[in-house]
Image (cartoon, rainbow, N blue to C red; front, side, top):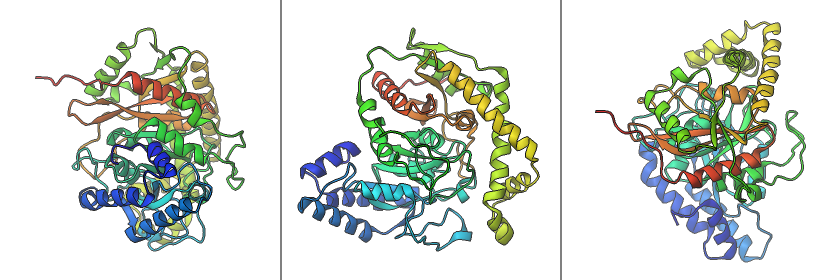
Length: 447
């Protein structure tokens, strides 16, 4: 059962060769064994998780219609409202908060038959101050953030699927550090209604899973127009699962983009990426972004900090002394940003997106780092999101694939970036590359 993918488990439950109770019980046993050392869960009620599984098995036995995730447990980042569980957003200021209704994403998961396993740990208000979670690959190292509990739960086999969010690097970074697949869709494809709002321009709901097919399976369920999120786009039915599983008629072409941050990359990570690019001549070609794209980090910072100041006004006014210094300083800087600078940053984001689109007219995806290297040692920081910032600012889809390892043997994800709205093709490219690069590219340890 532990070796099953989420898609296989869902199919087995529908076929009657596996029960949801057995699957959930196996996850709970894994949690009982590993949670004390990993700390992935902010809220977990084992009896309630089993009760949901029992109800799912009864519905199957009664011949009721079954959704694509029927009986499959999913971890929910603790910034998404759940009507039957606390949603505390990683801050003492929201301790005990229980919403009146599910957020849009959780409602869709329930409609698809998923078992809401529990709430996974987030950083403080989904920003930088870490929670209790440790990296399953090396507990003395950070799991990344802010979707730290979701990534750790997948990596530790505590749940087959989880949802998270990204406003800078909060899905791609923990996925890379923990060695799982993290998928940040095109901004606007999944409703953010009922989730913690940091930035109405940058926030994106995404997913974490053990493989690309499972990521497509859960994301497909979530790509339904909601109408309550003004930033969501109305689109035709999602085809993520079918397209991601399809074979390419010809080999895709990948643009290897180092970005202006290349000298901030750890030496072993830089070598690993260069080795990976060299393995695929004729498929991977180096492309250089215009110099002005380096301004993207400043544009993102301006938008994020101004939006944090607006979104967290109540928390700052009522409990600023209970906020972490890093968040308090970001809010205070955001209070000083000028409207003209904010609007210039929004214009810059549009310009950046156009530059990314220009590259992707000739390539199927961009190959680039998602992190500065493997997970840093220590739990006082969640690592830098800088290698995610441009792509988040541009609103384009990105996926982290656990295909590399660092010199220390820890996971090192590669990031693939696609065209805005062309998420299915991106996941198909990701699946193709994952199959081709079966043997992880490692760096020889230096003497």
